[in-house]
Length: 502
Image 1 (tube, helix red, strand yellow):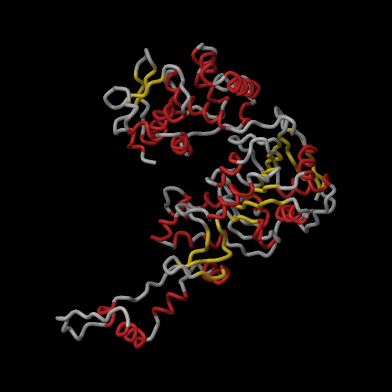
Image 2 (image 1 turned 30 degrees about the vertical axis):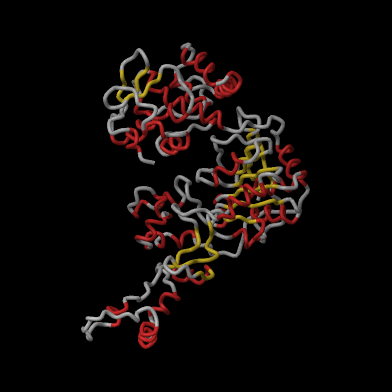
């Protein structure tokens, strides 16, 4: 996204009848300020009294470049510059700038009942609540750099928050308890399981985004602007050593799998697994026995590796020794071509592509390389992981749109925060009436699941199987394991799982 499309001086928001408020106070806040400028236009929700001005103080033209922003652009620009609030943050009823959880739920229901325009008239426009406080009802924390500004400065961000709320799937009210979740699993025949790094962490494989233990938190020494750049295909091609300096930390070095992998395999054995969409690159699903026709490795895996130059593909394990030793693996096929005998090169050139010598070329001392200049480059082997900047496999979208969408009867999301597109779009893409449940250590606030089960993934799935009467035998599940389950305060369908005896 190019923020310059807004115009070089777009830096203020004006509420009708009020003064212009300058939003850019520092370089750190400039992205958020630019986002505020485009939030109303992008969201499609009209907050009363908001007008966007360009550098000259005139309203932007609707037929100009300013009109090109849409919801995805706004969402993308805001993604790394605003702080989201989970519902668990809304328990302090005494805080003057935050809604309570009960108030937030009521505002969300009111928005859907009467629509955004009437909702804005009855709330912000009527003066019953400030835009700043209303933001918290929709999961956004007011940005610090706007502190002290008039409430008008929050209108653009509120517009985006309302649009995001209206785009969320509505929770199905009939599913709330653990028993509901168990019955759904038992009766469903076409279950989509979407998994992330959280299902492998019990084997010592780090996830990516955990605050202190995730892979990204340990990459400061690389000097990257964003730790995700370690998986950027452009940077890999420029300097593969950056990726290979951390690859050993995520290399699958085990033939074991977790109880959560075993749970997915059990669903397959019982004829219930429609598809396992995995964001993991460790290939442990295959080790656990998930059939290739049931598995979509959305981000590829270490199972194979390919040369970035000639595309020669090998079994991924063939480059593991180089990765473990901290070396950059090179392509054997490229090396073989480079080492081809000089006679072979002369024969190929004399009888092949270089028959037409320059008529007046009398420099007999020129080297073979100068004459033919066809020496191959030695390519770097890259694990067949889908890096940022590369397209996901065609099989991902084909399976989802042409097969699974019309068959799925239950969605189970396990061990992922659903932050990375396009996999994060799988859940909202599926029919809203299909039940959805979530299993992970921490909740997500941008998706409304029907049942949330928070805790260690292995503990949760083992308890679900016990209650279903299924035998999930695994070395990592103690035979005498007891699990305590309690409903999180303030919620009707969010459950906390804790193993109390091992």
